[in-house]
Length: 98
Image (tube, rainbow, N blue to C red; front, side, top):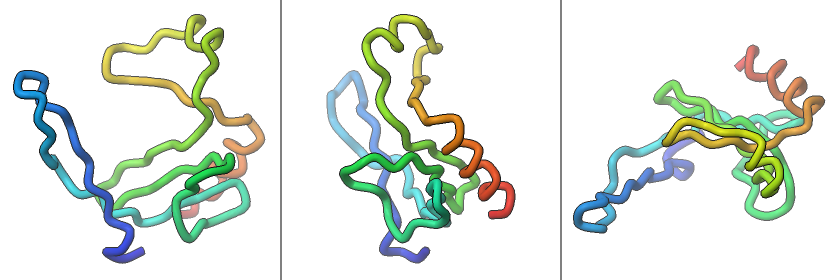
């Protein structure tokens, strides 16, 4: 997708509370329910899988409700998002082709 879609990933150094860049993420493909998307969804609901040149997949979905969060537990450093099963199925079929 080119350099205009490179995103900087930042982390916080807990000792000094300063922010510093760790790496650059270069997006290769963004796949939504209805196929490839030209850009990330900023507003509105559009679950998607973001595939990067670095070999990672990122999932964009809905934040969990308080009730959902209370019934699930993830190890430290991990989290959950919610995606309707039919949307996940549509995206998964496209990811295998990407």
